[in-house]
Length: 188
Image (cartoon, rainbow, N blue to C red; front, side, top):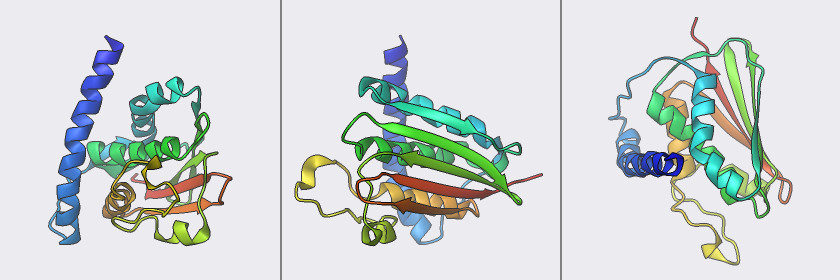
């Protein structure tokens, strides 16, 4: 039943991803109004992790949480923001040749909550890190088919984070993993 439940959830998410591709084009034209409500960012993080935990378990890896932020209320869209975190986690898994080792941290800085998603995967060069949020950008590797995708995931992530008045960046080093940093304004 657990597997069936997960298949059903992933199926819904795949359908949502198709919608997201269409939404990106609307976002580009500033036609998208995403409804937002008060949400607990820690709950969104925990929820996102449940989407990927089976794949991570299967590959003998882990996702550990270090949720230190004391204030966690944000104005966000449940589906879109969960997708943002799932997409970043998905990439951490995809770009880890060995067992994916992922740590998720939160902290409060000023009137913001910072979410850091750190992996110990393949990492990327400074040049790639600069372009990784561009639409359709894919790193050119010798074996282009080793990781499937259209280079839309992180473009969508950036658009959604910015639509939430947030900011996303990445710190990475080739061969040493990547850390994606999402900064979101808190609501009182």
